[in-house]
Length: 240
Picture (cartoon, helix red, strand yellow):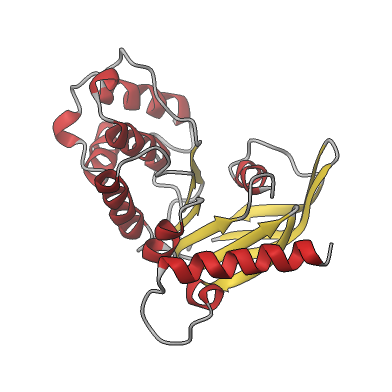
């Protein structure tokens, strides 16, 4: 669904890449320390940055909708508009000759994130978890094949994080979901696949259980995921 081939992006002295990854249907976690290049890679995938070399493409099965939906880390939404009115505006901005996002599509996005009953509420009255769900709803408009979420659970309480994780798992059933996070619990409970970056380079790509060092079936423990990532970063740093 999301394929990067020899992807390179230069930002001042920092260089991301070359990156070669292929992410299919399911939830993939993008991991790495601050400054590893996670946001740069996500912005390239979302089409907000232009690559200096290589390519990154989104593909969809024949007959399915394509495109990319994106949730930035700092999404807050305007406070005064009502939830449905805001999504109507986003839908109008994204609609064109090739695609018309209609009221039923807004209804579907609201239902997916469990905000139907709050569709008439002003955004400023929503809780932090609801605002995150609204951000995911706007990313879902147009039924994109790939959803990119930058730190979707940051700043949320444990119950809100659990709700978002459940939503991510449902979304990953029929599309490619890429999320960046510093929370190993997010990775252990939702991600099927992991891409780990260090200093702009891919240092691991594979299953979540592979990163955690396990071979049994089922989801690994959050502590094992964290140990695996730290070992990768410390190993790279030691040989730098």
